[in-house]
Length: 199
Image (cartoon, rainbow, N blue to C red; front, side, top):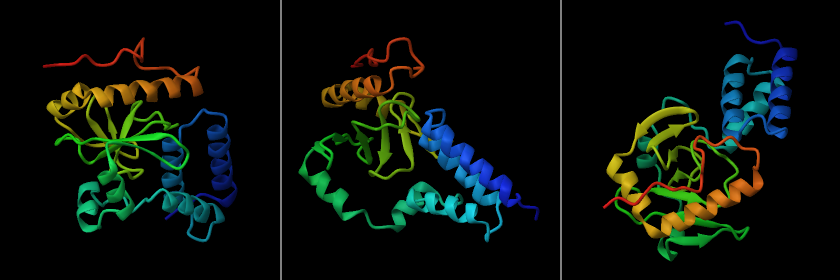
């Protein structure tokens, strides 16, 4: 198999790093690039080692493993279990809040108030509090890295947006994101206009 030369892999790594620091790439795109880089480099290449470390810190477990299957095979994090029992909204170590859905169809999703990552939506859910997979809270698509792997039912998303606690949490999350990213290009004209309540 042909691999990238070390100069080329280092250049790609550094360009990715600088683009992230300048705000041109999201963290999710950095992870995608690190995955591609790890597949294009020789295992002895220092850039391969750096890219693999970044992926392992993000909990990358191999692309052939299904996110639902891997969850069934692993015990749930005991810390997450403690947080679930303590209530719907709880603060993290930095004083920002997390929302744990108690609704039957979205009970496995955790939403973070001060999440700098805009993908796939603001706010978005993290499956059982992990970095991957992520839930688009508006459309119901589930993503692992940047690939759509599943979709929650329309009823699940309607149920989530009908929850007054989640709506309040979402407004706070959107406001925080707008304050920290004033030049962000939203996919809607008014991000503070939430989906309407459906009965």
